[in-house]
Every structure is written in structure tokens, then in C-alpha cells.
Length: 273
Image (cartoon, rainbow, N blue to C red; front, side, top):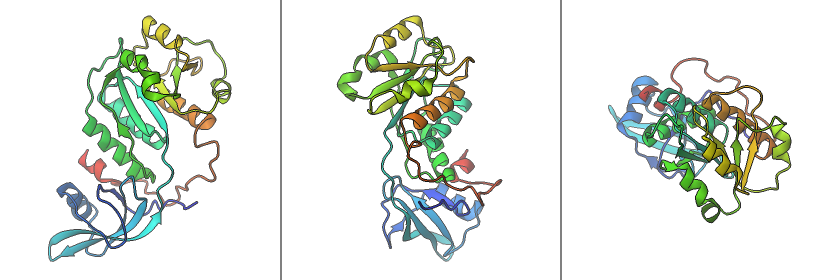
């Protein structure tokens, strides 16, 4: 398994990538590479687009004008796509930023925000969520950016689940579920696609909880004896699911963080703020 090069600067681009391709940069990317990173003509970096793997590229300038990036050799091929969905009630902005970042790091392929009865936030900024997802991918050597759904009603999502999702199972983090080993519960499930559901800071209503538990495609799990904040529950639950059902089970090796920058700007999204 190719070990991530944390010493190299990484940049997400939307263009297709192949040897010899010239990639145009937007104004923010030019500012980040030239004015923040102080890159000059011919300097190397790594680029990815979430589809074509990871590539070496070099900055191409003419005089004082940036012409774009010239793509060189492939560094890593695109891995098999993850199929883990994460269903969540929107949080206040700082905690939502954190949750999106951690969901990307944990291998979520699709972010699915839902309105719940006790939710405290009734809208989302998908552009900001995508920017946070890209930043997390740039910093952590991840090659895929999760899809981000429009905000939907939890009740509507559950009502049409089987028709829309087939045999995909919802793992429901139920704070009132009887204590037990959640890893054992997950390990006993038959193989199938999975969506993880974590509720709002105010918890699920009794009607929502009863409705979920009545569905045959829902498996409740406990996250232990303590009440967790929603963003903390996200990390804990995603770790459980990946360990029991996901890509942690058959991991060959973990990426080394040797040489990873400990300070300073790590991504364009971080500079953009």
C-alpha cells in the first residue's frame, strides 16, 4: 500500500486528471499557491479530483502570470468507493464543521442531513460543508469527497427508505437502548450496505424513536453509559461501524504520519476559512 506523502502540499481540483493535462486554477487557488505557499514556476504538489486518483503536478507560470498546473505521473490510483452513509441532524456551525471533517476522515461516502423534531438547526450551508470536506481530504490523504444531500425530513426519509435504498440498513444510535456491546450487535448483522443515524443535541422524540424501532431495516445500538454530544457520537459511532462492518476490518496497513506538518497552513480551504 502506498504511504501518504504528508510533506507534499495537496490540492483538490475539479478537472479531469491525466499525464500532460493542464489544469486551470481559480483565483483562490492561485492566491493560496503563490501568495501563501510561495510556490514558483516548476514547483511540485499533489492534486486529486475524487475520481482519477492522485497525481504529481507542477506550477506553470509565464512571467508573473500563473498558467495553471501541468499534470505529471500518477501517485496513487483511485481506491474503491466507500458505501457508508451518514444521516444526521444539522448542528450549530462550528460543531457541524468539525463533524463533517471527522466524517470525511472516517470514510463516509454520503452526508445526509435531516430535520428532526428536537433539532436546533433548521438549515445547512452545503457550500461550506463541501469546503470542509475538501479541506479534510486535502489534509489527510483522502481521495474521495462525499456527496452532500439536500436537507430532508427524517420522517419522509424513513417512510420511503426501502423503496429508495433497497437492503441498506440503518444503524440507529439510540441513547435509550438497553446497554450492550454495540460491536457484537453490529458483527451479527448480515452483510449489506449501511447508513449510520445520529440524532440532534436534543435527542429523538418518542414518536421518532418508536417509528425507527418499528422498522425492520433499523438496528439500534447503544454508545455506552454516557450521553455524548452529537459530534462526539458521530466519531464514536463511525469508528464502531468501520471496525465491525467497514473498511477497518480488512485494512492492510495504516498511513504513516511521519513528516506530517505540525503547524502552518495545510490546505487552501483552511486559508479561505
